[in-house]
Image (cartoon, rainbow, N blue to C red; front, side):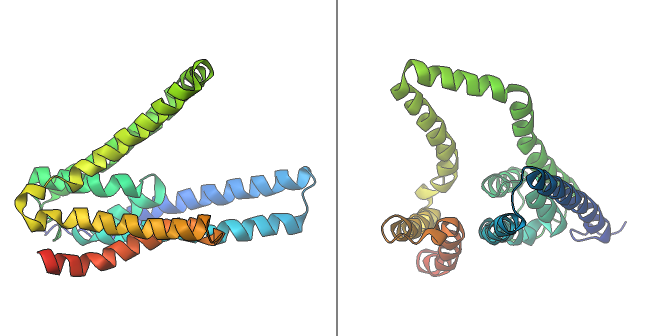
Length: 241
């Protein structure tokens, strides 16, 4: 029996075919949008400026996505994270989902998954979990939006409170993972301090955007805070670990 390979040629080809299909879709709709814009009388120079600015600001979220691919590739190989984060996956979901599944299976995230059953289970957790969003949006988004708008029309204050509560509920799910090991001593506080550093960096970026009016930083605040927190997590871990 051959050893399981996280970076096999078959996985790379499978991921590559799917990603190429998605890229082809993007170019197809880009071409349709360009033709429609010309039919509406929009000048070519305006369209080119829009394309250039959109391409430039796409770099910012792409940096954060690349960080996620690199992080996941350490124990899942490159093809699966590349596929997940290139097509449908979200960085805020993929990392916790993969880590939670690995923890439930007793697999260390610091080394490659050697068991094909564990790899398959982690892949299914990552895939099935994110698909719920597609189903909900497709079938129930219109009804949900109608309910929220109806609530806001009846009582604007409670409508805002409801939306804020939904957002805080989502954030609380991630905070639970950060504070899960604080009873294990100083080492358990490492994620908390890294989160605090990331928040501080985000506040600094917000100061530049809101006070100093450095508008371009608005799109790069996320990767700056992520990269900075990841870099500073090394001395924090050495100090507390």
